[in-house]
Image (cartoon, rainbow, N blue to C red):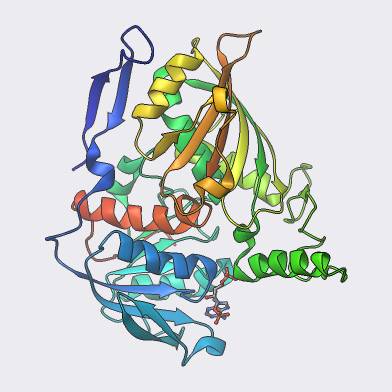
Length: 377
Ligand code: A2P
């Protein structure tokens, strides 16, 4: 069971700083546990393939693994722990005897098949946006709100990637100084739009180098050598869907329903790992040194803050890392309660696959991996 601990950090700050942090519970050992039957819906997609790698990396106790995708992929095989596993078409009877079902095939498939999986007794961890804002469905980042899992009814939502990465960085600062307002600009990679979008970036870069026209099919504009406002539709409030998700989901994750958040979401020609420039205002003053110490002690974070060598978080370096990188930490000279910092986190890992597996691990360790029951959706 995860326990909150209090630690005193004096080294970096020069004075005692009270830090509440999750014990090593967030990097559980998965050895010597009972094993589970897993299903991955969308196994052939960008997140699905990462789920396979994360389950291997974490030595998740897997008894049986069912890989599900569209009819197009039926008959393909994928490798897991040096075994070739056939991909099956997603059908209503695909969830018999499944303990955990990871969904990553888009909101339409989730709306149709999540109720089926729950009916069959599986605990669903859904990466889509379909159920995130349903009041009784826990939306969880284990570094922020693991206690939200306690009341789960067989369905847990995995947050939007930009919200998850932002939340990991904000959590230890919020615990120390109480968030009052957040202004955030994102630098979002192609991976957020799936495997085909990553391929599109590579194809356009190759075409450009060969003097050929860059063809845009997935994104509305060329993504190579370009920057554009996030490709989700702009809502009546003037914010695009991604920006609205960041606001709503961050508020839900922190149980701060009124928290003012001003996001600007942008696509950049990066293959994977999202970055975010964050300005956060707190109720009490927080120096850069205090923030650095709090972040360094928090689970799921690496502080990369090296002004001498001008080295700070970068998506290339964050790619493949389970941790969120935080740096460029500065106090606003005009307001001691406001901090600016820069974050890079692997969208496919902490923004998706790793957070989903971490939710399953946390459920197991909190004794909550019980069979699914009738729930709110
Ligand atoms: P498939 O590869 O068979 O199309 P990404 O986010 O990288 O675009 O991946 C989307 C995932 O969702 C893929 O695994 C894809 O499978 C899966 N998917 C798409 N449509 C369906 C569908 N109708 N039924 C089941 N899986 C689907």
